[in-house]
Length: 526
Image 1: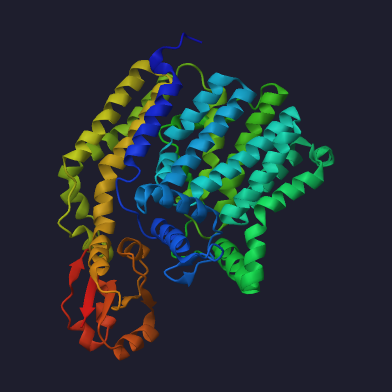
Image 2: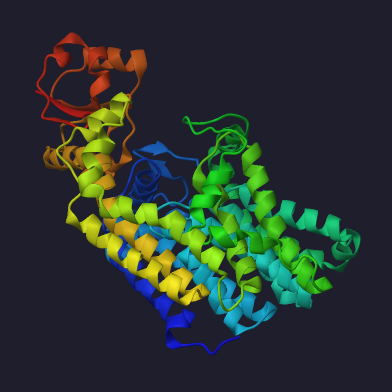
């Protein structure tokens, strides 16, 4: 291996990633729906004092266990109630997952492999996106990675502590997001043991009492308490609706074909897509090396298959595979990339550099491609990218040039970090202004209203309005909602989409909206 220069040392680039992430974490407000509803749930838990039953907008919210809300509340207490604090737990869990890969790489191959695995992981596009998102997946991915890595280290080295940590981490994964925390790791572990022919011997080698106890201690406390307090109705909603229901039926319009996750993986691992074939390398090597590589490949494939079979699909559902992908590449990458790998990366990313750099000039053409009424209304706002997007593309272009010159793994990781930077600073502000700008304007007006004026929404759930206005609103739906509105006495405020205005009672349809922007209306009925 050629002598390592300062530029090819992974450690400084880890600090670069951290600095950029901290600077950009609160750059834009929280997005609807998931970010805002999780932050609103944590806020209501903090200010309402009910630490057992999550509530969103005053309604019990049993979609997810509360562990992540506790962490978000701790961040709110330390840093204030804003987007930075809401997203900080995700950033910290992403860093912790990188630390796991550093530890795993060091024990499997050596310190250099560990540092490189951590950097590869952090430089993947989807990993950077999730580190900036106030959702549960970065936390879930940490505990799933801890489960599978600690299990594998126990299989390799036989240290009982690794097995205990795996059991505790799997329980914590259940505490973060429910049954998926146990289904995914057990499927990966079980299939690997069957393929290797070690199932019976491994089951006999496990000292079960402490393993089961640690799992139950980390997995079950909240479930038992909420069952005691709310009865079996909670279990029905949580297990049958939000878990089994998502597997059997597409929820909230989030469906997809069987190949849905193939393009998701291709985009999410950027800029490392040209190196994915390296995951198959080493399968024919020595017994232990081949088994480790097979385990990482199974971790990836089994996870993708499980979520491909589920009817509800979202890009981040398979994000627990990226630690495995990063570690697998780090174990088998050479000191220099092949020219073909570097060329493929350049060909894939150069169009993105041009898109981000030329976005202010391409914007009128791009907005003309919209056909859905909601998209047309959102893009009709007087918003356009400015020179910031062009500037954000420059570091990515420089990094691509450095990659072609150096062709090292660290240079490719630098491309990934600059890609994340270009997306966060070049694209995200415009996306936020288009998607969240109208709701932030509505929240600003509602925040100034006297507390005795109630706020309602009609056929609209936009928790960012509640979070940024510091006010709960009552959601009215369909015919029952129209009847309530017809009988309601002023004063009150009403938030709705422009397309729903025609369904309102006649007296409300005639009102001039206080805000009519981007497909959203705010009516003040006095």
